[in-house]
Amino acid sequence: MKPHHFKACVASALACLSMSTARAHYLWIEHEGPQATVFFGEYEESARERSPGRLDEIPGPHAQWLTASDAVAKPVKLSKRADGFAFASPIPAQATILVEELALGVKDWSMSGIGIVKPFFYARHQGTLPTSAAQPGLTLDIVPSPEAGNFKVYFRGKPLPKADVKIVAQNTWAQEARTDKEGAVRLPMPWKGQYILQVIHLEQGAGEFEGKPYQAKRHRATLTLTAAQGEPTFSPSRSSQP
Picture 1 (cartoon, rainbow, N blue to C red):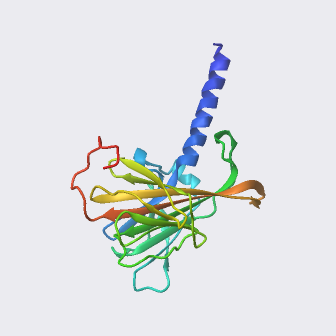
Picture 2 (picture 1 turned 90 degrees about the vertical axis):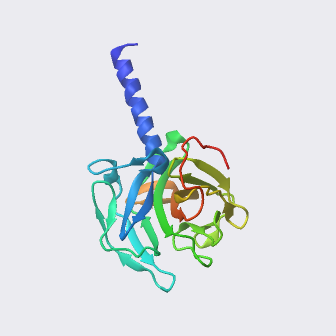
Picture 3 (picture 1 turned 120 degrees about the vertical axis):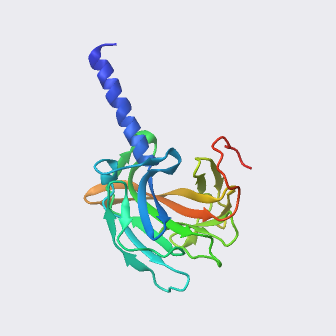
């Protein structure tokens, strides 16, 4: 292969890899002690983007939190750091945290079969299981029920059927399932510790953002939830449903 052909192939491969990575990334929240942080990357790959770097692709998420006794969520400022967006003030341990990123520009992911889309990112941190049925608070939202392993996906306040939901444990073990006609889905949580759930919804309909046209809106949401019960240790070799 001639040198210039080889360079062209490498450049093309890197471009495709960058595009694939871009559409695979998402936001999620981790809450330890009073400090909460919004990360950008892929939890199952232990990938957390940094600044300077790919974290700078995120314009600036908006966050709010509430407790079970609150009727209205409280906004809170986020501060960009090297590894993510940190909450400017302490967040109570049992609080529900809601984050959205609405300002990403239009992306041309046609080579990946997605088309030209306007991406939206959403993230919820529930902490522990709610004592009663939680309500959606984001455009695309994964809401846990009081019974461990049961969840419901909402889009614009209504149950979203036939949505593929993925759950990932700290050891990168993962499972997927599809919501039923009521937007409900059951996923196993075999270990104690943190889990990240993910869902994507493509909303058809052309539009324009910052002067650039798009064919559809691509919504991606996560839920961070900690299981208080289950096996105490994580086994990375365990990759099938228990």
